[in-house]
Length: 451
Image (cartoon, rainbow, N blue to C red; front, side, top):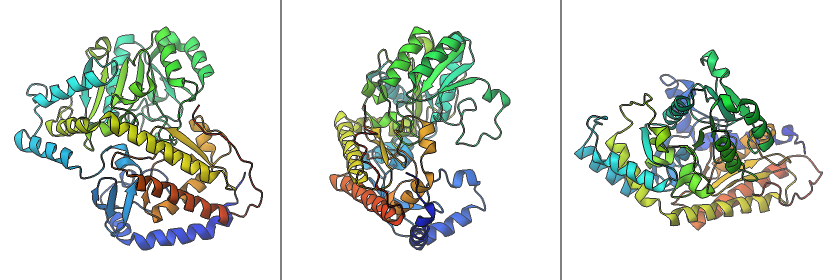
């Protein structure tokens, strides 16, 4: 149903005033930051908040901002830490490496912990026979493309419309600024919709011999936890294999949230990806990324030198993170994610606004539309004003949410899960009451459920 946004302006004004009253110090800090930090790195995404909230301290899943407000982190430190803030085990490991080894030594003076972590990656991630390290997911995806292009001799990349793979010129899509990209960056890709197997097959039929690689996320994260339908990722992997095209699974944002072996292990992809790209949660909150895969692909003689790619201090954090990342942890967060999605769906069923809840495992997404959200196009067509208003409302009630994929991490308690559901229920109810439509929507049953 169409929502009259004008009917919500009083509610928005009230919530904005409440936000500003609670975060005046953050507002001052943001104004001061504008004197030295470019706008593109002062704030990201359209979350509804007038300005960023500065963090002063944190412990586990909670942090305190510089105005003294405590918030439950629903975005896992922007998807960077399964074990939250101030984890003593990870911090101690980093401190030891800092005091004992310090600055990186590069390929000619590596630290033993680099090799230890590489061996553990190969033992844990399906299909991993070799490892190339990088300091970020963007650089890791750059290396993955070089590997694929080296082995095929082709340039064309098959991508998912609305997907995100970091800052590589040939992978960046609309939704991010495309200013400054070389003209060639717009001519060496072919895009298909997520969950669209017909388009995938047609694209392979047309371009199969020209493709350098297929790259896909296990779950679409930037548009809001859009989960696969009908084994889409496995079917895409099979098509790539049949056409002799390297298959790249980009697990940078979501992979570290699903299982000890990553998203490919959780999905049970057969055979495993040719190349898997890892990052964010891999480093326990510190910048660690990696490209792993079969030896034929990873041994391609590409340029992959990088001063901080083998940094012993960040590798120490990654090893400590692996120590903590047991199967039991992932069972817990997957169950908690299921509980959050179910709770919000149950609340939404009685509202007069259309709400779709998407996601899998610990990853959750909310979309204001009556259409089942199966790809980024449907997500973009949803009511973005309601999304921003909702984020403002939950922020005022102590949930830190700024990106469209959210969910639990290891330090979450059952009380935290109940808080998330209760806050969303209160905010969605406030929006529903404030909007002036009197036509009840039909109950949608299982729309948005996993298939």
